[in-house]
Amino acid sequence: DKKTTHTDDLDTYLPLNRLQELQKSGLFGKLSPRFYGAPTTYSQRQTRDYDAPAIFNWCEEDGVNIIILIPL
Image (cartoon, rainbow, N blue to C red; front, side):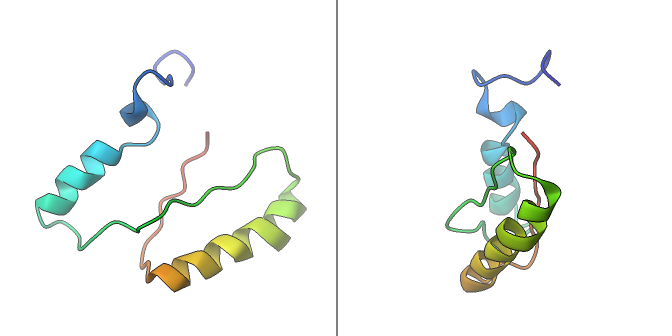
């Protein structure tokens, strides 16, 4: 939503502060040590065949159990 999401406020599109608060409250164990993303200029085939498997492999390496993908 271009009217309510902007780069001036990171929490409007990547809520790191809220996630850290939830982690500190004990809702979940820990955040991943890195963030994952895929270019939005590719086709669905490119995303399915190349980007998604790479992200999956990184999540396995980092011991991630749950991932929330946020479209930008």
